[in-house]
Image (cartoon, rainbow, N blue to C red; front, side, top):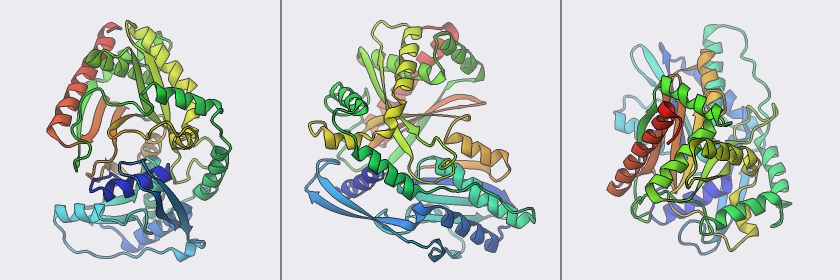
Length: 433
């Protein structure tokens, strides 16, 4: 997945297009920041995670064009000794809001060391801590890990409490070596590879596409995000009860609704979707920062299906394909060269709730008092992928979509959200479409 990200950055920006590559997180802290303590906390955090001691070299070995149409060699460079890494605070004085934003997003690329930045914005009675980190160094779990470790240690240093004890950080380096060995042993006949091939062949030898037009993908675009409240708390509870009645969980019901939305918009008889899955499964890497996320393919027959039938099928597909998150589609492309890289604006749907990664680490940081008012932001760039988020929290269920900022895409995404809300509320209020 790191290789795919690097390749996307290089090839999209080389074509004059944008590529979203940062995760930006903030939290609010009362009082004046103790700069020395924050500096110690951040350096301790950076030295714990070996991903921060790496950068990459990229050499195209075959001409490309659109993302994925060429080949490349990617070499990883590392710093051996954690103590060789040291950040120092720099006072930038007073900055306008736009200057702060520019400072946040203007970090090196993953082809340079140091494509991450940390800092504070001091106000009269409080300050905001921020972390702006290139995706090459982590998946969404880095938000909770960063807040828990960096700000937790800062809190311990400034309150005079006991030492801030943390479990071993594990090694992303070692995990990558193990994963490379495992995926290198795959063949075209491996069951997971065969499942990916079947999935791609059902989608014109690639990945699924968004059901509505999104404009010209080869025109430069910034990213925008729009959201819609799908269900209030009571509706969310009734929706979950309907899922359980169908023998499914909440996530199965959501993908059933997405399938119905696509059927209502396009008449599609089968829904094909993708969702990310955190592959951290042991205490050895639960607190390891790095890219552990893979994609899970979802298939739901939807023509003439009731909600119960679709929810059960979606849940079966989700549960049965979880192991495919550890088999990158990009490795499958090497084994099945007749398949194609995902086309621009292919949709990936994220379901986030408090009981699972990455949201559980974020909530843990909040509940333990190490971070308040956590904010999560994009860098305003638009990448190759249309990203759909569904958040379930105490206020209900919300869907947000990150899309290319053009009139065609905005109209389509707005329509998609309207239909999704309609479908979900029908289930919450009546149990069927």
